[in-house]
Image (cartoon, rainbow, N blue to C red; front, side):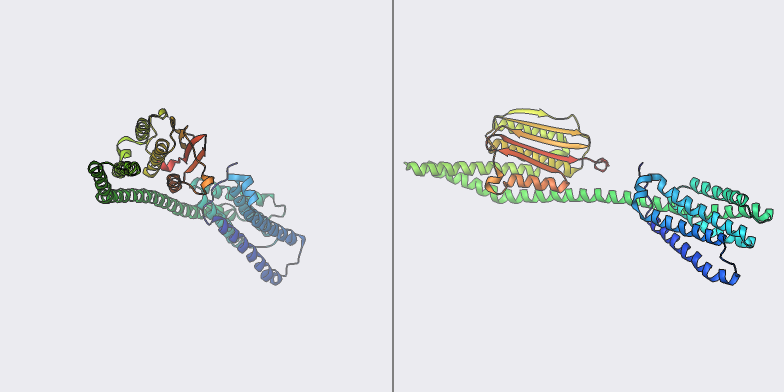
Length: 414
């Protein structure tokens, strides 16, 4: 049975009421019974035993977690029923055996019924409050009728006073129920405001990230790209004006020129990646398709794609992470793995989004070097930022498989 979510602070209030009620009854017994010269008859002993058993039961019941796990949604109603029925039985028994005024009869039971009423109104709706008020009102005359030694009471106290008391209880229950309903509505509005604030903060963070990336792109373009471009021009000029060159110098010069051109190409690609925002225009599926086809064309790879038609609107950090991980894994396959074939799969199944990039090139052994490559380390950091899990399986002769998994929740689409 599914456990019911109890309102905050309700269990503590219930336990405090049981303790205060028990101590209050003991104090009254110590003060009033000697003055009333009532002997400790079996009636008093039985009533005292019932009070102590009830208090002990409720304290254990409300403190021990096992009843709540076993009873589920019936846990709190059982506790309320015991707390409401027991005082009626105890008080009516005492009033039936000993001479107690009718007014005292009414006012002594009323507080013990009001606290469980407040707990009911706090946890449940006004319909349950009405059920509680009517049920306790009908139970009391039924208990009084079953008492063999029941004293004579006027119809006014048997009927009219019970109706008045029920009206008081319904009024109290309505007020508490109304206040709790307003509190719940305010909590829901606050939770919704918090969700909007989180989304707004994420949007602002994304905007700040885009601005910073654009700034870095400008800085790299004005410094590193210009430097590499000038270096390439100078090496080309040196090759043209230097006549007969020693073979060793020729090799070094050719290697330096190739490295400079490669660095310039990589810098330009990085600048384009920093400035571009393809996810905003195309969406995650099309972007991954494009980057996979581009990488396969550049590396002369056989490409296998397994992509869905649409994933819906995912949070920007999630889409960006999957895009960057796919881009890095494909670039590694083209640049470092010397692969012949690569496969890319993107799936959303059972609220779990997974990306798998696998190649048949030469893998690597991270344990052999004692540290991960910078590219894989960057992918892991991106995955950790959104709470995803990155798994990289590779070996010297078995290629590399990069798997990224993220648990999608309803809040991601909210």
